[in-house]
Image (cartoon, rainbow, N blue to C red; front, side, top):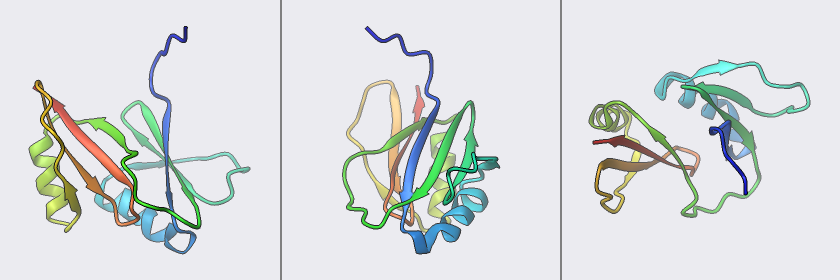
Length: 118
């Protein structure tokens, strides 16, 4: 058995030629704080999200799949309005009792779910 303590980090990928655009999206639109990354990780950025990290790196081919990262937020309606003001693509999620949620697709094809516990 594995006893998980907490989520440490999530990794998402973008095409190499869009790395700087991704950095701007995640800092200026999403509002994440950049943090130092190890030198061996030559292409990409790391960010803080509450008490976990988001690792942004590059890949050549990125098909859209159902894989995603999910983050609990304090006001999912406000998050939706903020992302709508930046013309971000949304996906509606099936209803789960006790949760208000939606997913969005970042400009690089990554699916991210935001949820609020009711």
